[in-house]
Image (cartoon, rainbow, N blue to C red; front, side, top):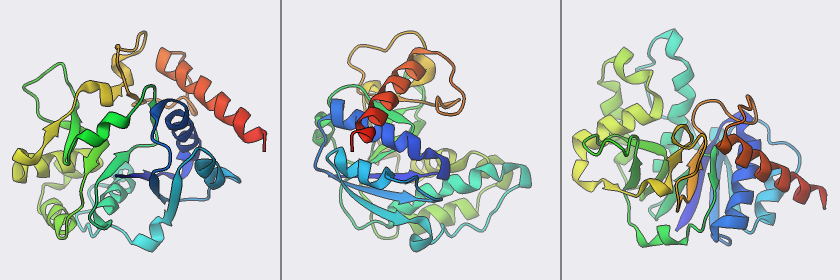
Length: 243
């Protein structure tokens, strides 16, 4: 298994903190971590990922090209355009990959994820078991030839307003639930606990907390997830300063 992330320009600080949390809590060291990135990385950011015990492979988005999406949507939905870069992960060679959004933080050993098989995800609203939609910030995937083409073709035939503004998550849910519903495997919420459900307490056994909504490196709110993230970030900065 390899790790993979797609990085927004202002998310390097998040990636640093995620890498540190995986190093001290996750027991996932020595894995190859493919990081598809955009923007300019801060000095030392790339080296720090390796210092956390991973074997990073950095690929600029421009080298992978852009998703072949023609249905560009309304101007006011342009925020979603960048999110479709996540579809580049389906261009990777066939293998098992754990996709991680950079705004995750690891709180407990993640070695058990290797016992699961693609396509494994966590429900967006696990408290509503009848809802099948999933969160795309944590996914165990295996890219297959032709999948991205199918995905993009599906997108380009959909209603612009309805689908485009939902970004990558809305499209991938719609496509998978319509075309590959039987291939979806649902993981325990402990693998991707959304921060909105953990403002004051972290559920026992939680492996990852996903910082949805305001980001602590931009708009610190003082919630428990933001406080835990800040502690991990401070520790990572202390480690970086020792070089």
